[in-house]
Amino acid sequence: MARLRLGLALGGGSARGWAHLGTIDALTELGIRPDIVCGTSIGALVGAVYVTGRLDALRARAEKMTWRDGVKMLDLRIARGGLIDGAKIRAFLDQLRCTGDIETLATPFAAVATDVENGEEVWLRSGPIGDAVRASIGLPGLFLPCAREGRWLLDGGLVNPVPVSLCRALGADVVIAVDVNSSRMVPAKAGMPSYFDALARSVTIMQVQITRARLASEPADVLLVPELGDVGPFQFDRAYDSIGEGRACVARSRDALVALLTR
Image 1 (cartoon, rainbow, N blue to C red):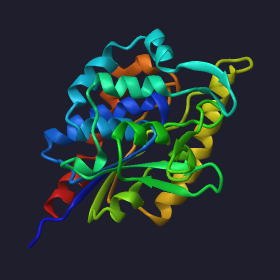
Image 2: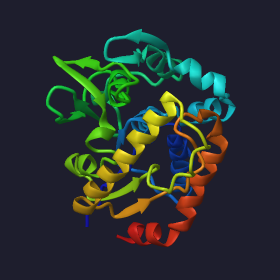
Image 3: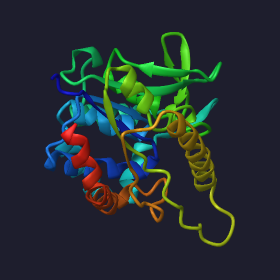
């Protein structure tokens, strides 16, 4: 019998996405290596780094990242369509040597973005991997839309926050999905939230609802949900905690994952 092809769907969630690093580490220790990797937003970034063999380098950078380092990645500028250009995200990937064209990768990879004009879900399956990640990471109202093949693209989390369907479209027989947004959020501090906090929390609320709807009709074979309620959307300096919880959620689902392996 032919071995079933395993897909890994990494969801969006801003700084919470560092949990994907711990999840992938723990899955690897269980002998689980995906044949297909798909990601949305921060999930696209971690997935891209994983399939290009640079996960150790990203983990080392993330664990040392301070709040100021996280801010530096967001190259703020006042411009029509958003505040952040996104060039520093591409530069960050270049520094990690996460480069090359998607179609040349040994492991099939794709990222999800959203067409600003018509709201269509766009699957990015070819071309420079850094460009695909930048297009997938485009929080509306914060990032400038990204131009690609005559389209203006924003964050894939607007249409498919946890891309199980994309994994299956690429040929996955079974899918492990990681949803870093659906753990209950800890209430914000008293007083009016900042612009960035209010925006990010609003998008998170929306994405949770979209995720529930999509996963109800397109369920994963195993769904991993790290408990990250106390990690804020822009707390990129909380990588150590997020990575640890990524590993913990795999441990909690070990029986389901072992059962999946026996298939």
